[in-house]
Length: 245
Image 1 (cartoon, rainbow, N blue to C red):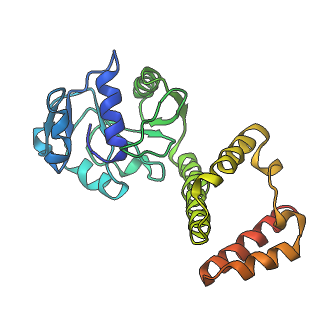
Image 2: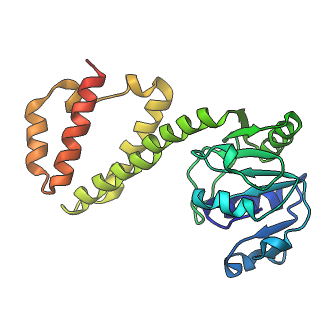
Image 3: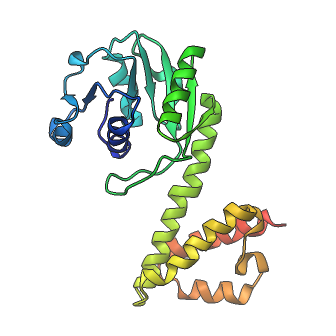
């Protein structure tokens, strides 16, 4: 495995604990970041010292995939784990593939891979089988998906996860600025996700925008002090109205 970011840390733990997976070695530019695993796994920060393995999993940043893979010079299967990056970017000289888990990862936050979707792509049918088996070994759900489809999926995930969390953060800041604790918002965050899953987001929309409640919308705009928040509120309100015309 290559990389020690958020995903890399989760993979290290999973691969080490999986009964039928042998984690041969862990590479990272900064050796200090992975020294904790040395008692369980061989570690290195030198690409030319990579040991032979059946599969090389690149859990590195999107911008590093091409450069790092070009320095590997491996004829075995090399996969990257990025959602929005084409498989063709791999330049290791060997067989190519993708092993993309659709989830948000943080080192300090424990996460189960049970039933977690992992999007798989490979040039060779046998390599697809290998990646499917690896996903199942982790308890995940493998989905075959080409680079074009995966790019669209990644875009959808950015709207749902990254933009959604950004809105949580704005809501939190607005509440805190008025001495309202974030804890009071937690039930509505959970219920929003539950309803979207149970009924579909298109049937779960509520609020002043979908009701065309202009009085409430005006009150909200008056309460917003930051221009950027006013603009975002207006943009999202207009988008909700357009989606429900």
